[in-house]
Image (cartoon, rainbow, N blue to C red; front, side, top):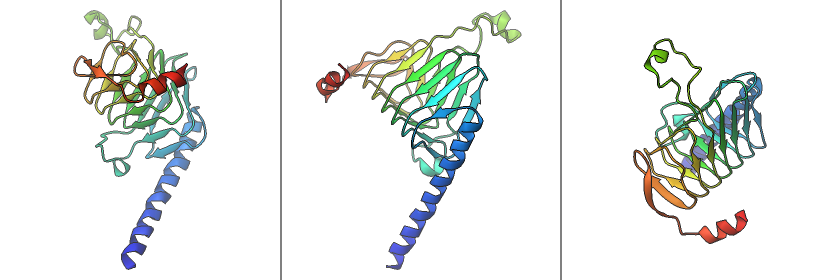
Length: 214
């Protein structure tokens, strides 16, 4: 009985932390001009960078996990949401979970519903630096390439993966842990490696999902 009481109190203590993180996290989002839907849940506080002319939207039931205390996958930093150029956009759909990932948009990153983004994943829609070494010497940003990224519904991206500019990941696709995605990924397929290569098709429930999409 005493053990059960201690366990219950420990659970209540942890839940109180979750509620506090979610409360202060929502205030943080409001402060930075991030729009969000119902039941946003935060484990730890994310880092947010938003240009005044940029937009960041989080849908209903989105979960952002930024604390190692609440995640056993070994996240090594907080969730980072950065839309740091005029008109850059981050859109995250409903029921999507993100663990210690970096989502950095200078163009547009659109993430669908029911997407799982594993620990320490990086999603970049730009190159950060010019391909020209003379421009890199002076950190000239005018010619840095950027292309929008689209991640469709039900995608699962494994931990430590990197998604690069111009990529579309099709519905219900799975990206293996540690992959580097440099090209479009068809729906209902599994890809892994550096660069990511086709492994096999996802057959389970594929017909049901296809019908709901039509």
